[in-house]
Image (cartoon, rainbow over all chains, first blue to last red; front, top):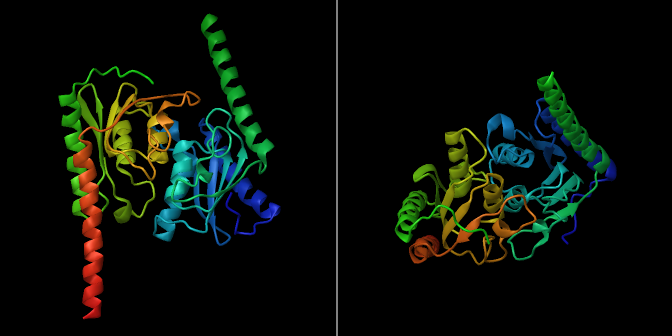
Amino acid sequence: MKEPISGLSLEDKEYYMREAIRLAEKAGAIEEVPIGAVIVLDGEIIGRGYNLREHTQQASSHAEMTAIEEACQRVGSWRLEGAQLFVTLEPCPMCSGAMLLSRVDEVYYGAADPKGGTAGTLMNLLDDERFNHTAYVESGILGEVCGQLLTDFFRGLREKKKELKRQKKD
Amino acid sequence: MKEPISGLSLEDKEYYMREAIRLAEKAGAIEEVPIGAVIVLDGEIIGRGYNLREHTQQASSHAEMTAIEEACQRVGSWRLEGAQLFVTLEPCPMCSGAMLLSRVDEVYYGAADPKGGTAGTLMNLLDDERFNHTAYVESGILGEVCGQLLTDFFRGLREKKKELKRQKKD
């Protein structure tokens, strides 16, 4: 696998992941699945995003896509070479693909996604030499916090559904 | 692989692919790599897109993404169940992923992409049972026309570059 060139310390990585977590919480607060992402270039956050699929009713409204779009707009280029992407959940094929297309160099994620993760779990699209770009991938950055956010969110959903059923019976 | 449920005839498929080709030509006319896509639901085109990466400077400005976004907006939902997608070039990982997320049921493409196609060439992301959706895939719909568009475009680019070099020398 590609080596990381940014030289970020664990402290740096956790700092950026905490910002991604803050964005995930913003999603959760409006009943979207809590996933957040940031893009960092030269020590500065240049893109932020959180999942908004239900509010936009757009299949592509994932945290990473919004962060990549904001970053491309910010630098005025579809190329984000030298950038790092932080996301609370392992990326899906669409977002992994967008990372390849935008030439992001390093991807750090929190929790693994056993159902659809393509940055190491089901496959690693970011480390496939057949594509014209590859990225360094590191998992488990504040992984428990990121995973717990999702667990709590889905538990809350189930409890709400139960409560609604109970109310209908009464 | 999933069976197609739309019952489209070859004539139907070529009709929709011709519209995707028309969109690809619009891209080519403004010096974008000529790739076009349409989404069809119940016999009606509900989304159109063509590659606009250089004009938008957005890594995600692929034909299929724009078509999916337009279709989601049109139906007011991120779910495009029952829809068919037509694209002149085999989709990349990002676009294949967006097709899975939007639950498009059938994907028809023209030319194969040996460098980055993930709907059968390098892999088939649309027919991987580990994801929560799969799609029927059919390749080679007006494949030669779609491929020729790209060949001509890149030949034109090379010739322009040569001409520029020659002018500089003079």
